[in-house]
Image (tube, rainbow, N blue to C red):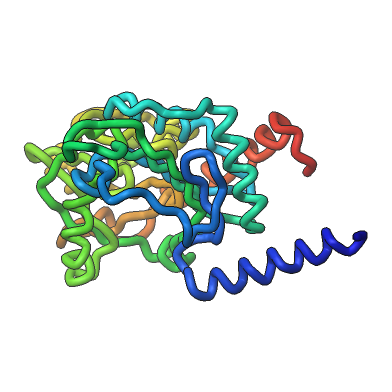
Length: 311
């Protein structure tokens, strides 16, 4: 019938609205092991090493204007994480890109978070890695409110270094265990340090400005995609130093910020009880945020041209 596509579209829209009302954390369709299925039917067995031992890796990124603009960058890091954990990725890059595009279309959304998960697989002895389960989730996008960028945030420090720091593993034991401490201290997040050197935030990278010099830890961290972009665009205007960053050097910082997929360039105005600079959001941090947004605009154009998407 001529009206059938119309009724199908209406049904899909009603279903999505109904689903979002009762399952607010995810969009209704997910991908698991070769199939796009309703999220509430996406299951894996309880003997997966991800559940038994916390063994697996993941990746998370977001859309810009409804498009997975930086998917190539994040897929490269996801592939690296899988290699670090010796987990074979069952799909090629172009296949994953197409799956993501299909998922975004089927979920009928504009902006979203996209999460890849690669598990240790079903283990007969609860220890040996087997064929991984590959999952893609589409999630509501949660970004900081504008006033957070205007006021800046507070971090609290914690002595900790992640295992396999160059891999984005699913093990967030320390971060989650200490989340209540953040709330108690009215802090935004936790800044890890080890051997008196700053490393990273639980889900972000960390930078400081010393006047017009931009400094960030180099080793024993997860090298973020946003971090990489910031270093690239900032190098044209600032002196960049990737090196060990002693905790004591926070005393000389004129500005600080954390970087991440949803946070972009988020100013930090206090660490523990130490005021960073004058305790206000700095001009350099504001400028970098604008540079980052301009960069993303260019990447949107490049993505549209590469995949021949109409503007």
